[in-house]
Image (cartoon, rainbow, N blue to C red; front, side):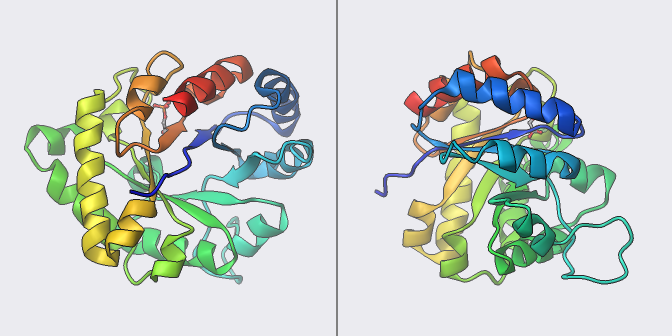
Length: 256
Ligand code: PGA
């Protein structure tokens, strides 16, 4: 089995001005010191990306990511941001298909797929999010839905492109609720996702792809979640907003 380097990403959502982001990065770098035990990404709002990128120049294992992009390369899409614009600002990653984008902005698997392809085309690594609502879980539909989200969101990607992709499993009922999936619940779904990747892209890709868990990850539960065999890191919302708390979470998760 491949040794997968863990990747822990903060998703600030619509929080932090550029000024606040600058203060965060300064404090975070002091907290994290020379730690390089996993890959770390700060997914900031568009308006803070450049500031975060500049401030991270001295910290090679921490990079900056965006939270969304538009699928077209350029053109008459007022208010939108392209993959090349993000790449030019220094982004390494971009989140695509977050459940809040799916829920509030109507993003389907087909759109998520186009966004992932646009990101890859500009040299960005997409963090492709999937996950079920509570209604789907309670009706026993989690496996079917998550497999179809994976297949739809990653349709047509090559094995080479898949080497750049991170998948994030985020059960919608666990996001921002304080109610994380249990390590066993999360591991079960991660196993299905890895199996789906095997069907779609073969055993090599399935074995090498990092699958993050997201949904109420905190410093106190990061180790037990990240310690599961198919959980390769975390996508962290609320707990990524505080520099010390996020650094503590990263150290706990990376060591698991
Ligand atoms: P949360 O958010 O950690 O605040 O639950 C996770 C996410 O939405 O990525």
